[in-house]
Image: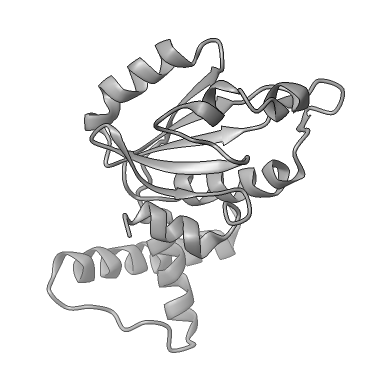
Length: 183
């Protein structure tokens, strides 16, 4: 180890000790005042944040019933349960054939994965473009889901949809946050 690392180690340990002291006491460290101390405390806090792993299941139209049964049976174990309906991936590009899905998927996953709550997600793939375009697609005519577009993100609670984001809004972070918080 270099001398700078060895000399810096007690300082970092001291910061960790202060952060633990402040977290365990009723005192709170004020938010950033622009000092190096505050910046280091932010790093310590960020490293200490706990995120729950997201439980993810995947289903196609043909496997949906069995996977959905498992999803609903496990839903009471999770703080929040979501279903995202997506277009299938094009085998030649490994990207969805739906540009809205390509835009929304990373945003949805980022927001759900960063939740401190225990979140479950069922990814339901609607099929290729011709399959999805069929007006008699099973999820278009389903009495519960009534899909109109993809992607569609729904919050599932107590056997019912408690909120949804349709294709034109499924990529908006503030809307995903609201759905995640149950609003």
